[in-house]
Image (cartoon, rainbow, N blue to C red; front, side):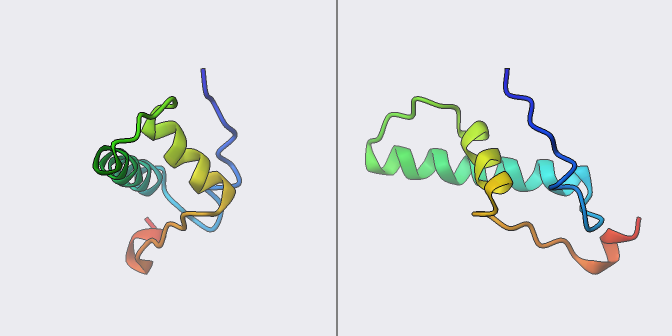
Length: 69
């Protein structure tokens, strides 16, 4: 089971809600791109999306008014 340490990602007041929302959005993009290209994914899109976020390839920008909640 894929269970990464999220403490590094959740720094700078990033909420878990924003992380989940961004991961789901990126996972849908990955799945759609693979479908359009006729590519078969060997790994789940959510895992690929979370890897991209953890590696810094996909940056989550959270509005300032949400950060301090």
